[in-house]
Length: 417
Ligand code: CTP
Figure 1 (cartoon, rainbow, N blue to C red):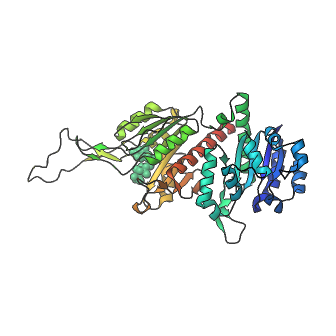
Figure 2 (cartoon, rainbow, N blue to C red):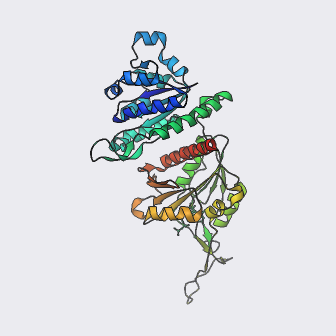
Figure 3 (tube, protein in one colour):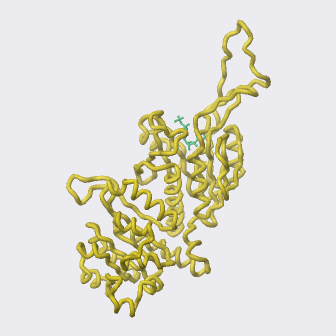
């Protein structure tokens, strides 16, 4: 039987754990519960124990517990550790590596995969301190589910902070138990299981393209390549083999990534076609929509008396559309970007359909936002299921969150097969 340790944190959402335990046990998953001191204000060890049909663990310094089944053994006997609901305080203590109660001691002593389902007031979730802790925990290999947007328990409060719904939690726990099992049966370590993109090939386009007017002049745009390069680095950190196809940028090549440098849209398309097959393709490049029909072979001179030259433009190939609609070797997950200055979400929803992408990451690039060239980004993720508006994050955070989501998507579609 698969077993999880469920660490229940102190929050209003703790009551949902009762249903979670019931659903997991229906699926033959054993649950051993650890309640933090605060959790006991919301659910009683008695009700939790009735559902787990096991002892409930509450205090690090219970001598009997420590003699019979210490925190190390609790973790050793589990296939997965789940923290739900994870409060802001628990996340902070985890990020700092505290071990001053049983919950944090189990988390610090474990070598198992850890899934965290946060639930808290939206302002606490968006607070820079919580953002920092989540970033740290993700970097440590902890996986997250939610929180989701919606009404909060407090009257009149709404935003991102709700615990993910029980069916979603169950689905994710089952998927992670499969990952853990695959990792242990192939003899690979926890670290390998934390690299959910290992064995996958990820293609990323990044930066602008330059379209020649003549040998010295070109048409370009303000893309810095920061977002695309961060995505390539994030995919590599999750274990993927990454091919980054970059237009002209001032950034160094990310470590552990194969980089192909191109200049024009046509060169970028060619490099993409040579790189496919890939499991995931992310089109973050700001490809020039047009190129000059016949660029000058020599520098166009400004001879006195003649008027300014007229540039005849022709449309460039749409790289994303070409790949998304080219059925035979279409990557399993095709992600496009939508750079918009108005009606951001509406245009992105439309672009997802016309371009044939699975997901569109939409961002507002009106100059006031400072997205082009800047380090921050505020995005909406448009999928077949709807639109998620992500809180403002750095481009590195957007990249990490996007690649974690992509890895989960591949895993769940694989399981669905
Ligand atoms: N894209 C592409 N090839 C092109 C143009 C765009 O692969 N020739 C990709 C971009 O990398 C991005 C998505 O298409 O993932 C949307 O790019 P965007 O510039 O927002 O849209 P456009 O198609 O250029 O449409 P418009 O300029 O009319 O908004």
